[in-house]
Structure formats: C-alpha cells, structure tokens
Image (cartoon, rainbow, N blue to C red; front, side):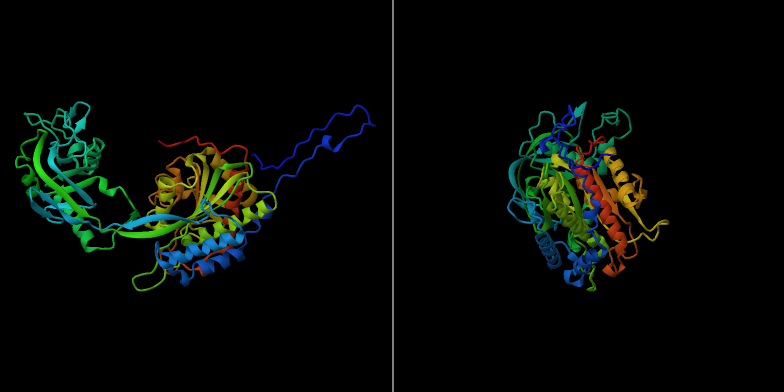
Length: 521
C-alpha cells in the first residue's frame, strides 16, 4: 500500500575521510510521514452529538426542500464552515449553489385547429408547455425508421409539427414489413416505441409531435386526470428548454379532424392545416441550494476529492409531526462537518491534503437526487474530469435490525463498480485504521432495493467518477418522525466518520489518482 509521505530529500555526499566536514546542505533531512490518526481523533462522539441535536431538532422543521426548515439547515452549515475557516467553493465567495427546481403541474391551454378550439383535457392532452403555430402539419404515418424502411424518407421536419400514429407498416398479404412475417416488432409495443418515436422526430428537427393511439389514449387520460386531481405534482430540476419541443396526445376525434383518412392512409404527406399550440406552464418554482466548501490541495489543487451528504429530509407529516431525519441524513451531514474539521486541522498544521477536498452538502435528495444531479449534469463547480472520487455518506448512525453479526459494521456500496484500486484502497485503509466490518450485502447488482441508484453518489458514478457509498441500512424509524437524535449510536457514528476521513485522506494524498478500470458507456 502506498503511504502518504511528506519528505524533504537531501543528498548525503560521500566522505573521502573521517575528517571531512559535512555541511547542512549535504545532510539528508527527512520529515517523518504524517500520521493522519492525530487528525482523525478530532472527530468525536461529543461533537457529532452536539451538531446532530441541533441539526435534527424541531427547529429545522424536517428540512423539506425549499421550505423554511431547509433554509435554516443551509444557514447552519454555512456558519459551521465559517467558524472552521474553510472557504466556499464558488469563486464568488458564496457557500450556496442555487439549484432551480420546479413542481410539475399540468399546463393550461388549448390546441387551435383551423379556428376550432380543442381544450386541454378533452380531445387533446399534454404534460408540458407549448407555444407554437404553423400552416401545415407533416404526416409521417407510423413514424417508423429502421435500416431497410423509413416513413421519413424525403420529408423535411425542421421546425414542423408532426402527426404520428401507433402501429407499424404491413404488406398487402397482411405480414409486417419489418419482420416479413406475422410477428410484430417493438414498434407495435407502445411502452417500447413511444419514446423512440418522439425522440426520432425530435432528432430530425421537429418542433412537436401529435401522437394518435386510440387504444391507449385512455391510459394517457387516466394519468392526466390523476395529476389534475392530485395537485401535489412532482419536483424536478427546472427545465428552461421545456417549451422547445412538445408531445401532444390526441384521440380519434382530434386525429380525424386533422386528417380524416388517418386510419387507412399510411403514406407520409404534408397536410394543410392552421394549427396553434397554446399551452401555458403552471409549474410552481422552488428555490433551493447546495452548500459547498473546499480545502485547496497543496500539490494537486486542480484534482478534487468530493465528500458528500444530503442536507434535506421530508419535512412535516399531514398531521403536523416533524420528520427530524437524524439518521437520514443528519448523521451524514454532521459526519461531513467533522471530517472537514479534521482536514482543516491538518492543513493548519502544515499537513494539508495534496489534492483539493470538496465538502458537498446537496439538496433535494429525497425528491430524486436533484441537488447532486444539478451539480454533475448542469453546473459542476469543478470539472468532472478532474474529480478523482466521490465518497458519499447517507445514514451512518444506526444499526440495521435485520442484520446479524458485529454491531461495528458499515454497508459499502459501489466501491468496486468503477475502480478496482479504490475498492482495494478502501479495504486496506479499514484494516489499518478502523477494523470495521465492511458488509457488501447491498453491493450486489441484483439487490432488489437498488440502493446503488438511490443516493447522490449515483450522479457521480454515471459520469465514471469512482464512488463509495457508506450506509447503515434501514430501520423501523426510516422516514418517520421517530428518526430522532437520541436513537443514534454515537460510538458507531464516530468510527464510521473516522473511516471515511482516513479513506479520503489516502485518496487525496496518494501519488497518482485512483485508476478507473471499469468505466461504463
């Protein structure tokens, strides 16, 4: 195993005689290897507990994304980093990375065809905003394209609205053109082909698709009616380009109003029709923030090790009970603060990490990994290709009641998925410093819980950045008001936090960055 060393090398000149004087510049001067244990010991049960009893208190109102409790949480984290003297990661000096979110609501409006209005929710359905008009519609039949067949041949879709129907082309004898037999292809399967049809039209420059599938229109209508009744909506990253392309679902009445022969005529053609899509978004905007701090590396400042946890939780129940989220993910949040303090003490002593350490508290994890998705997919503060690894902490303060064996354990997920070297390094560091039982139960790709895909590390992993996810498993208090600070095992929280610190220390200080030898596509 490679050790982290700070060595000032001198050259010992050879002596021709016992009487030769050796000058200080000729002496070998070696600084003893830095022992990170002294810094890991600053991570204590007491400080973890002090932080958590505040962070997971009723005052923070369950830290719901975008709500006042979440604002109190980010203010707490900012103050903590200011007290530690760890600067913000953003160049503008702000600890907060704004994450624009929205709660999806059904758009309101209508489709106007030849001066006739078709209101949203009747013969026409759409789930996104649209504002566009044209004097013709491009009919492309089934909208199918394969190596030997295309409904788009000779058709110009650039900036146009396209009319597409379900199904696939047949020969005169009733066999299917694509298979040459009576066997259907995937184009006859709505679940498989709908997205493919829409993406195909979009890739060819279309502005929108009018999709006619009479046998499945009722399914789209049920989803539409559910969303209209259940007004809560789904939170997602705000899509500023959502109006650039529109998917419109139409029934038989609407389809025949556009093209009366649509059922029997499969030949692509241009249809003269004045059409306007007037659907206005009614989405609710949500303002939220990641909190990001950094300790710059001493030798490789442009290589980054990101240690992350999510700062949010699920807020208040319908009956007014507060979900404090002490384990999920108060435990990871306070562990990250203590790990940051340990690295800062090392830096203050002149033993700071060679690579930069980024302390990333993400928002919106409970809403679908939104804060980390924004960081990786939209606005990385530091280049992803210079990000060496992500160590993600999500629930490390409790014990899985279904697990048998030593209580001093931690579930490790993903350590071997992209980098053999990171996995081996993790094992070696644990053996040297922590002696925690590393349990890989949930690392199995066939694990039905799919934990590998359910926390913020995944947004780094999908970008081929090696990750380790630290997790204690679920318990009876998971996502309930009973997940409170008094139920945390602070000795285990300390042990696990120190293990993560030591692992981050090694990744940050080794000579070469960990090798990605299992990169995905």
